[in-house]
Image (cartoon, rainbow, N blue to C red; front, top):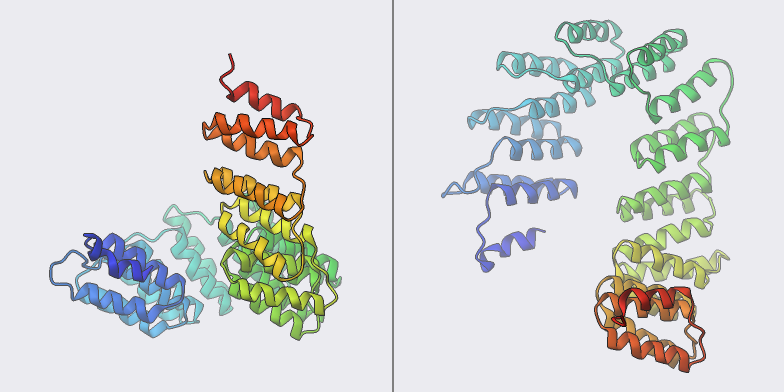
Length: 438
């Protein structure tokens, strides 16, 4: 991303505050906060004013710094923003308050809230929720009650996140009857509990009633989080399991690895895989499949190949179905060239692609408008001794028709007949719909 930014002038494009902000966001997401700070300072020193930092720019970097735990650096940047005459908005203030509360600096967060009010910026529900989270973390229940009353006075009402924090605190402190009252009040106010609330009520109420959750119970909660891509909450369940003397099993790890690669956090997925091995948990075909697929999506073929050989060492034998499933998933995401590379990869690890493998790839090429590449694959199949079936022919035939190449479609149809393959209903339906025969 930053290479493209630096080369913009070569293409006659002048970076502006929008392109700079986009790059800053990307750098912060990749935890490259020093580079983000350097770019921010470059923008501030810009002579022509085309990239002058604004409130969004500063808020982005401040949030990135807090995310990396660099609290003082983030707060000092906030002060520098004020010195530069840039007025923070509610998002900026919320970012500061949230970051301070998460580091137990609640007193400083209260000072920022007062400054916010003095500057005429109206706190919103998230402002109060961040503060309440800070109070709860410090065990300051009386301050929580006072802020809730202040919220109501300002016409603000707790949302599902605020209620979740309150319920979590009450359950963990054995105040289950109070938690139940708050839970019931949510329904009366028309607020629908989310998976987080059901999860900790489910486990914490069990503990409060003397019932120890087992692996099965934790798996239900853990999988619910992971399937919702709520990784932080899923990790919390990992820690909670250990507190109850239970270790994450292959199902837990497999679900988490699957969720991580779907978020394209493949490096984190690999770390979890290594942690799994170090803890003596043996991966199964599902875990290997998720991780190999994730590595394929980001072009880490050497690592994918290494992992495949590791599968053999673990006694897990990847077959053609394993790889074809990966190809199908890649095709669905539009990553046709990556799916093409899987064919070469299969041959390197000693797995021979079958007709379904090639048909999957042919379909991917035609969907991407690469009909000639799809046709070449048909020739490759024949050269390696595979006999295309009617599904394979129909896929290419349909591709020709959608591309308006009716002559090629006609020639392919004649080849189907010549090869002794019986056309099916799909074949004739395509002919009737797309051939200009009437």
